[in-house]
Length: 347
Image 1 (cartoon, helix red, strand yellow):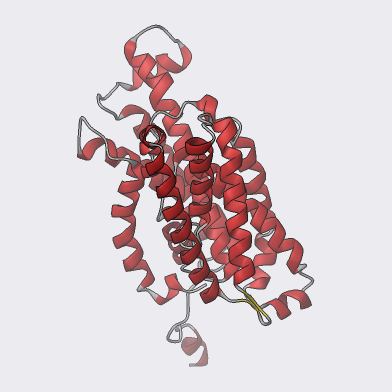
Image 2 (image 1 turned 180 degrees about the vertical axis):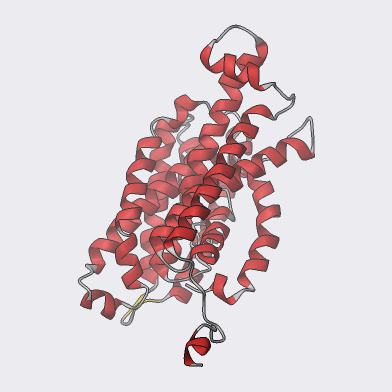
């Protein structure tokens, strides 16, 4: 009788799947992502046959469809994959670091800091290439992250509520300052209009190459601190008792977060909801283990971004809706449904 009783979950208990089911789920997510990668290359203003895509990759010619594949759709897909992965892992990282399920680069003002840096670079200094303004995005993201953590520090440690309030306030101030700069330079504002909305259109791979190594370093750092972040979720004192070096973990996490968020914003502009929603979905599937959450976010976020980009090409054909607008429409109702589940909204 006792054995039967132990099989039942008590109210509020989160049932965590075993490693085998997590791995199977990860494989399923990977297959879905591969399908979305193929669809992203095939679907556009005109649907192109798979044979043309194959020829464009391995038997290039001057055919106009091959030109569209090589110069537009393929770079757009690769950049969507990289930016989505950066936003997903960045969101999971900042939620784990702050122990706040409502934290994301947008709410904590990191997006605003990166955006303001890019706005200053483009609108004031006239820097128009990503090799120049990406460093301003990194600097803005780093400065705002440090400010939020400093303002959220108390004698008892980091206060998630204070950090959210600080991030919202800093984001509002920087958003207003950025808008003022854009209005004083209409030409620069017109040039960055699609960037402000969050878009993958017109981003050749040559612009992304300098940032991709930064993404790789940041992902390595994020997974390296996933174990200590699991311990820190139990509280700083217990984490120290388990041998976690809190300062080093936070510094490495902040560096990774800055590289991921600053780089993604520099390439595609401020895209919201991805970093907030995807870690909730991952946590709902695999439980509170940060290694698995990071792994699922690494695949789920680019899938969401590519699916939103494909949807944006279809809904107003032959025009397009920027992916940043689509993620907001798709993400808001899904996130509301998820946070109403106790096991999805807690850390």
